Image (cartoon, rainbow, N blue to C red; front, top):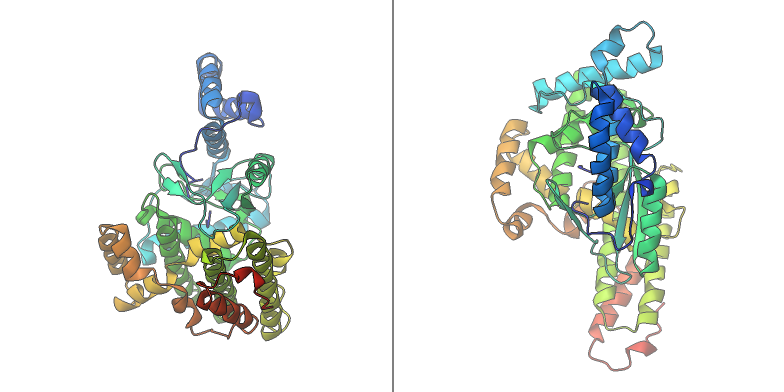
Length: 423
């Protein structure tokens, strides 16, 4: 997304900031000018003061611009690297794989044939951006930020982890639930030729190809302000593309492994979405604040118990341990709802056209012309879609919370709600 899977126009920050607030801002501008613009010093005498003034009035946008310019400056054509005898063998192998996947995306998936993913940028850091998600303490609805071009989104991306953590602390001080997530890839929606990033190369081959398909899908259809629809569309294209890619390459073991990972991911997502819906009901109840806070922690405790049960079903797989190894809050559930909320409905739409991706794109473009409410009614189902999937397992630990919430709603007219003692 424009600033991943997976926040657009910044509200003006209430704290003052200058160029010094953005780590390495001047260095990034000079680096870009040296690499891309001949005679950079005369231009810099004009551009740097202008940029500094813009930073003073909108430091968030300027750190985003500086970060994007740095990526642009670091790009190297993949074809050149493949032909260079000094390119390390491991890097050459990964880039050759991406080049094949990129050509497949155009030829077999109908994805854009442009300059994206035909260059490489070594960022020398673990993530390209860090996204900040936020909600109110008693709400599962994400805070939204609005930006030019991309519209409104449910995250705010920073090219510096320290800046992301600083902003998250500010939100927490204001009573918000927050989460900070490192992102390895994102799309500029075709406004720039997106490179393959060094942050992507630690992945498996399958995930690397899937990400290329996902990010290119954003260049096919993107509705400003509709993160859930956009991400779900890209997820469905990614799934269909990777199935075909692995089948074409004759990699049955890799395909079987990927399908197993998808089944486990589906169980994980269903558990998160289920918890989110239970919390939504809790926050809509008339319980006192202290009770809501207590029940909120209880719900997240049950989610962790559900994960322990899932791990047993998975024969001890620890794939999501890092996700659960922290104190959870509402904001941690935002990406699941954003990236997967419309996936089941869009899968059905793809199946209805016999898996023909160009026809699928046309159908989705038709949906894009509808008003948002109608479009979501057509393809963005509710939790039922996820709970009835082929990989469905009962939410054993969750049922006690379900039962308790049902009783709360049955008693909504009773004055002494605070005396509730259900566990």
